[in-house]
Structures are given as structure tokens and as C-alpha cells.
Image (tube, rainbow, N blue to C red; front, side, top):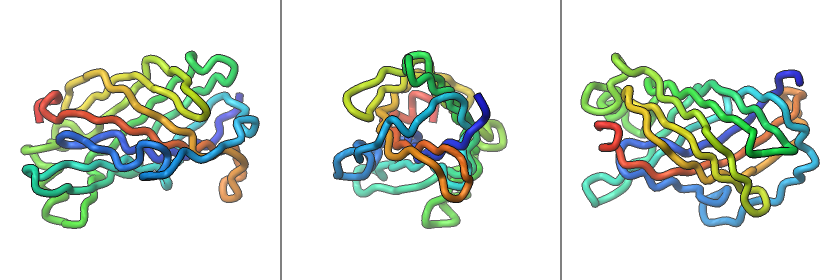
Length: 187
């Protein structure tokens, strides 16, 4: 099947206990209805201009910091007839960390946290996809961060599908969330 575009919004990665803001498609809102007939399946590529990994970290129990990683690359192989055979691979350039403070951005990519000099990229690779009710799925896989690979399960919600007016290609959008503990990756 020809390569197609994939539009993702994947809050999945953080630097401490992550509490993702969008657990059901949009924060505090029900998952949107998506016409699954608009999805043909096949191979998709990450559309990196509109794909973000958002994260939340609690700062010493006082308040939350929010940040983003951008410029993702990756792919989705979607088997519509048998979703369990689907595969997801996302590469996250950690140097693209963005918060509301330039000094914090610099600190996060340094040796105390993400150590981008030694580990410039994080990666999520799916190991199984289990379709849930409606337009939801659990995507089990491994997250490699700081050279450590651990299992992670993403709670995914399909948020849109159809013909993209800009790219003129079939596009799929989803939100996926997970909670991780940064010390599991040695941070």
C-alpha cells in the first residue's frame, strides 16, 4: 500500500511522574466520534509539523511544569482487519524540548536530565495493539530513554480520520497517554 500521512498528537513522555492532560481525546471531554470507514489502513508516516509529545512533571509537589517535544519521525502500519497486527514506531528528538523558559529548556537537555549529548533521541516501539471500545486502543510497547528500554502502555484515542486538505492524503489523528516514573529510566 502506498505511503500516506499520519497526523499524531501523542502526549506520552515526561521527566518524572507524568500526568498526561488528554486522557480521552481532549482534556476533560469525551472522545470524538470518528467515522472508521474513512480509514483504509496500510502504511502511514508521521507528519512531523503537527505531531507533538506533551508532558507534565510535578515540581516538588508544589505545581506542574508542562513541555513539548517536536519534530517527531516514525510510522504506523495499520491493519484495519486485524488491529492486533498493527505497529507503531515514534522517534522523539529530545533536543527539541520546549517549555515556557529558555533556561529550563537548556537545563532539561543537559546531563542532569535528558543528556542529549549522549542520548539525543527517545523511541517508542509498539509490541502489541489491543482495540478497545469505540475508537480506543491500548498500545503496549517499549520506551527507550537515556539508553534504557522499559515497557510502556499507551491509552490511545482515535481523534480524526479522513482526507487532509493540505497534504491531499489520507490522515489519521490520535491522542495517546501514559504515565511513567523518570527514575525507572535512571533520571
